[in-house]
Image (tube, rainbow, N blue to C red; front, side, top):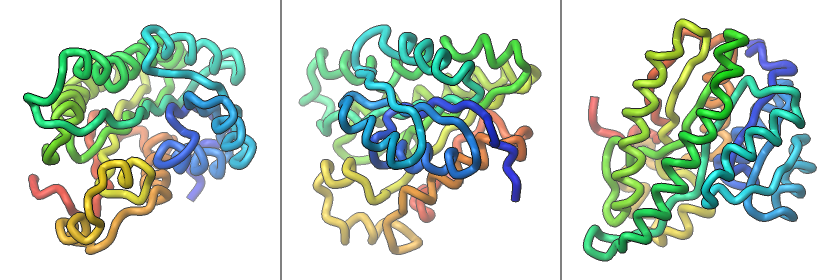
Length: 244
């Protein structure tokens, strides 16, 4: 199937490894011109070279960094047709263990970096009557995970924001969708230190996901073929979510 992504211009955040890298790699494979970003200069450039993308070092935990990133990627590519927002998950913690500073840090990384990037990229998409915005969140946005209080709270809010935005921009040819990965083999999963057997026992498919599976879903949603899919929160989780 030709997804119609040849020469489309994409910015994928948090893409030196894991889910972001898999999404960027899938877009490159489909013929898109891709910029990836990550905090570590050496790592992002190495990944960019390996997958055939451009790399920009950027710390999205810094206020205003997302706007500067979109500007730099726009200059590199000549525009942005596809924006994939993706940031690392905040530390674990029960509610009474989380400080105000931790909430602020999580809000900057998960919320403001996302909304600022979208705000910067959106006007050009609306003007050209074509755009794809994908938010990489988590199944925790719909089904809270134990000990991930900051992630559970902020990611759920992003779904409301994405749905509202999708209604505003649908007539302009811009789609907005959220990707909800479940337990997937990444470095983030190792950080959570949850026993693999315990995770697999909760998944009807009885295995962990592969990052490439989320990458394939993202490539479709970013494509011309998915022009009528917008305002959706789509899980790639092996059946983990129990709700309708």
